[in-house]
Image (cartoon, rainbow, N blue to C red):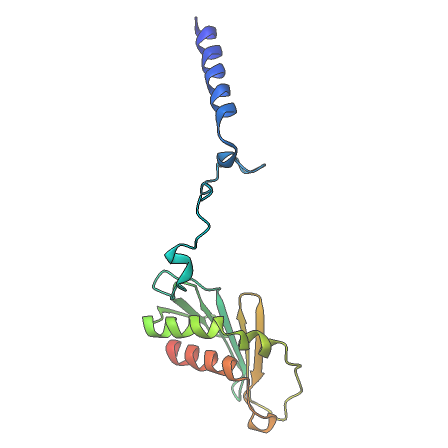
Length: 173
């Protein structure tokens, strides 16, 4: 009798798997079904798609990492900001401080991180600095990496990169 129940269960389960609609089938190797929206009959854009979404409290951006090194004392600080605004600062000695950006600072960081000028600044060729004991900043936003040496003799720092650095140093300092 137990063998009949097992066979019946296997048959029922096999039938359910075969009857599952293709858009609900699991991608190969994942073992998890994926939901996809049914096709819409209308080709008119929905109100949500015509209005750009403003970054709200749940909007995310890439992780932001700022490394400050150099200076007379030979600093080595790393600031890491998660997409939700939580931050951690680890200094050269390994001491750690943590906190959360204010809503205003997080919104500003998101605006700066999304600014196309940041990627343009990342493409600038680096040049040797004319200063000794100056701070060097290396900023990584997702896959974009940029930076500068804080040396007036080198010319102006890249604007958007500098704004992110100033924001993070001020908000986490």
